[in-house]
Image (cartoon, rainbow, N blue to C red):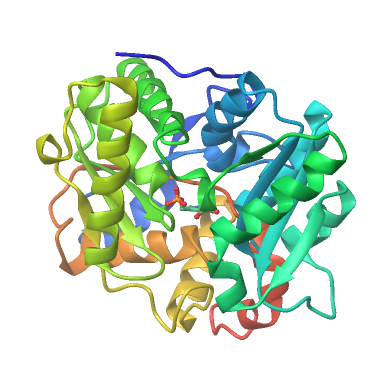
Length: 335
Ligand SMILES: Cc1ncc(COP(=O)(O)O)c(C=O)c1O
């Protein structure tokens, strides 16, 4: 199998820790599961979260291609865009972010960091945002006139290049499991653009973790993600001449926890965020990790995770997304 270029950016390995107070609380409620957390919120300070793992490969490829400007897309509060912008600054590159929606009156959270690290930003309403090929062509021309070469990173760095990040992440988890003497029933994460899940699925297969990989979708639905992940795996298989085909690996997307929509969470999700922060000192976010964690607890109580003994939650970061939603957070009833 061909190997992609990679540069070292994340602070690895991240810790795998048991959540003992939460697990004890679950036990009191009749749920005999030990919850573990893979602290990928600790991959960096400013570029923290899951994206930096993928960007080790996406930016590795960009540098191999001689790029000067990283171009990417996302929501106004995109963690991926913030990580890309910060890493570009760290490496002496430029970044250009195309952000979906109107420029907000108040600069907060991820957008504040985008501005601080000097990203060039275009705000685009939905129809314009979706014309990515056209926009990229225009940006390519604009930067070429300045003698600069662009590199296109898709939404969430979720393509056949970026998914290597969690193939490597799965290898790291294998070493964690060995040192902890652990064989978990499931590894659980949020899925938003699919790359983390695709990488974990492939890593589980390539590195023989022997566990189940599950992700809670925070937007769209199960059918969308089954298709997106199969496409990314097929592109990966073709590009790197790999033996694993999409049909060789189960894709488990747990639907039903999107709530009011992408970026908007129910009061129950905010309650879970409060509960985990107060019990364990771990901060989740309302867009990704809070929804997935809430989903995981619900499925342990009365769904497909019932009876599992050890479950590993991958904390994919996203804390900056909490700040623009601070009012909803404290509207929750939990003391
Ligand atoms: C904090 C956080 N967690 C999880 C995800 C989901 O990861 P992926 O886009 O690889 O599906 C994202 C990005 O979408 C994210 O920013």
